[in-house]
Length: 410
Ligand SMILES: Nc1nc2c(ncn2[C@@H]2O[C@H](COP(=O)(O)OP(=O)(O)OP(=O)(O)O)[C@@H](O)[C@H]2O)c(=O)[nH]1
Image 1 (cartoon, rainbow, N blue to C red):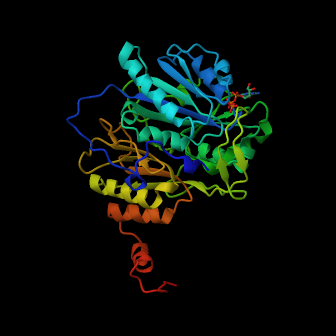
Image 2: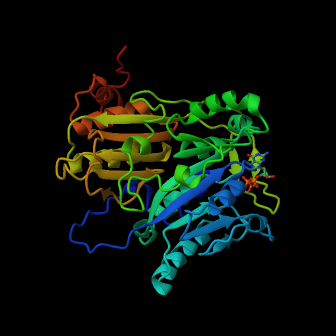
Image 3: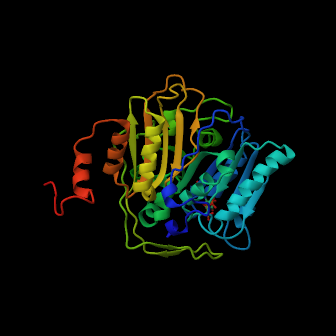
């Protein structure tokens, strides 16, 4: 199971969301390298999309990391475009487990190369294997002291094909996770299955209601639609928080998309071979859902970090991804950007200012698997001073270790 192969660089679980102090005196580091994770189930069309991206005029100063099973790097041959900064291929194995260390080393080398020969490196695109769970990959980067400073996640892109996409979501937990955590969803092969397109769209929205859907069959360049979609753009401008948080595409605060698990007990024993075979025993996975937390008033830094600490402690294992923009009491003009995965927090960053016209409410989006949403809401309410319904008292009485045995509210 993917969760068992977590995090070569992970601190102990109780250090989830370990905070790194925001040090205003620190000298300005070079701009972070934008990291794009290109995911999607087996055969969905990732390499095709990558080729198309690399053929576009605006995709420059980019390194590409691909990972393919087997001795012959087939994907390396398929990536046809010339990439000025090089194509790096990882050896066989799955990026979310056995090759994760190699990816970390590769990303470290790219930083060294940038400072070594002075060649510009603005972006790295990592194409994952079709069965990879993107969350341990990201967590390995976020918890790495050097990589977490040098790289900024631009987006997780999930490629999903109209032919097999719905069936993959039905049958493979990896496909659901890849889609659930995506910031952009690229739909491919609509030419092969036009009639199923609406059904696929519904299946996609049941798992991820917020991410922009990009139809790859449209001839328009892809790069402007799927690259540089973070809050801090490569050219120094500010991205749209509503877009980043998935509010533009249907996520409604307080509502959530749901996806129930299917099948029987899941075993993700990654028995990698050169035929792409993961041991896909029948699996059971829970609901992948997203929830939004909103707070109108500025929140104290201590309160938001205490909330994140509690979230990590109680629900960290169920958080696939978390992103948020927070209006803090301490620096009201500089929004705090939060980004976490699997209970680990990327070093928080401050934007220089709010984007003109953007809402200044604090908003957090949490994508979880089997997340106890009521508990998350109660915790958030407890730390942001929003009076909750009776739940906290009730919990205190019923779940308190000193509670009277058998004491239950009706
Ligand atoms: N008709 C059609 N074929 C496509 C489209 N996108 C990809 N393909 C084909 O689908 C096959 C798989 O595409 P790839 O780009 O190799 O898919 P992938 O996700 O990289 O595959 P893996 O690395 O094996 O997981 C190839 O034969 C592509 O030519 C599309 O939009 N329409």
